[in-house]
Length: 336
Image (cartoon, rainbow, N blue to C red; front, side, top):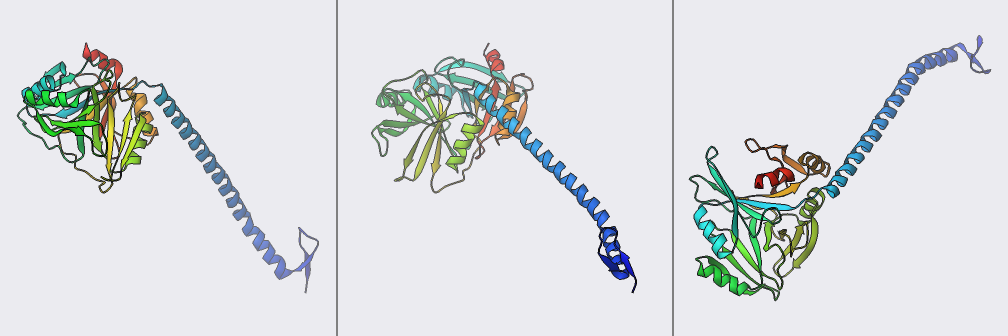
């Protein structure tokens, strides 16, 4: 049998063995090239992934920075009513608010009237919407109530009744506590909690209460997406519910959102009566990017409102409650 010397070794090999090695070597060259190319692609993909993570981290960092830089406050709450005159009587004579402004939009067949305890430049307000020819709405099961602070719940309840208002829960201690409360109801069916406080701050309009299906998810949304603070929480094992109060400042001087979680319920009907809460921002476009970077959902992209020009964007929380962010400069121009 003939012997051959393999080029890459000093070991002898026979013909069959050398042919096999040559075949394996010729096969290994394309494989090596493919492996090398695959390695380069893999490194490229990893590099792109690292760059993507770097960009994402930078965007998240910018979003957090904007959330800290932005100057947000709650402006007003929007809800629909079926009788403007009856609503005006309740809010001015019963609750002691004043009308701050109004606008009638015939082409849209609706009227807006704003009420509050002081000017909208500094205080929270209500935007009542009356749609021509619609005299009633479904409040659903998700909306809870509004709240107003007073130094004397008994006196305010009496005033409401004397002016034709309706008290649906007489004044007295809250369940499981000592603080006095009462509940009134406006002509459209919205309930108002009368909250007794020893000392009133600059904002008597105390709260907007909304029911939610997952309290922690809601807290995360209002903190991380809207930039609010968690002011306090409360557990009530006896009645199986939990509360979280969210806002941009202390309750005595600011309107807050009261999130209510009932332990045995995770879904609610929205109805078509309650609308949304409006919050100010220095830049709706930056706020839109910040909301998206924080994992929030934007349901109306940032831009001017047709016919008005005020720049806004809209987002919804995990339960679908809408918040509209309004350009602060445009908002102040509206007030002029």
